[in-house]
Length: 329
Image (cartoon, rainbow, N blue to C red):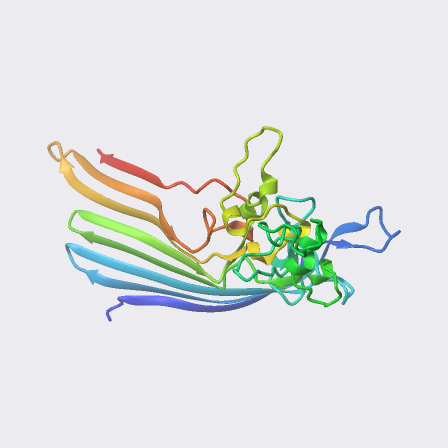
């Protein structure tokens, strides 16, 4: 088509060895029980497709379109010098709330920074069950024994799935659930000009990505409201859960992991070139630009595009409007 279409297709597979990781060591062999050493291996595999199209190429009109599609999958292939079948992996991904809670893990056979969580259980209305909360607020004495005690409240076994069926909820019931990095990336850009007018915009989308909503887990329960007179907002997620307290298991619940697919317009601009002015001695052009135009997503947080997969931000990304004036002498 007279060189109107061009592009590329790339497939890659990269094996990376000697990645740094903090690992446990045998007692007495070092001055610490953990050391930073080169033990990790990882594989990345993906496909990249890029396509550009010149839709119109005339003297007074030009229109160009660009599209790209990328898929990537990474997998941890090694974590220790000596295999340990009893080790789940290396805990990472510290969160706000509790002390020393990590919601992610590097585990052999899984993507990096996979979420490592408890499986939440839900009541008949579809609401997540809160361990320690009353089973019936209108009738606190749920079992009718005349005393409101632990038997009238939900237990951890009510709130979370006992995945190994040992009758208790503990670390052994955590499981690997999804990963923060998307499986698919897509992009679309276009620029169009007609005589002295020109316009351009860029769209970007990510699919099959997941985010841990740390704002909801930390602030979406009544226990987060201070009693010392300081001011802290209760997150609106409380209206959906009714959580009155939090436990380590609740912070690490898969309830807070949300699908965070999105479509974002990064920028949009319109320009007009006035050409030569002031007796042909000066050139003038003017443009209007908008950055971070919009984002479409079902994610309940402020912004679905979170680096690392843990969202503990309460400040939105700014939308910027600007007017540019360019004078050339």
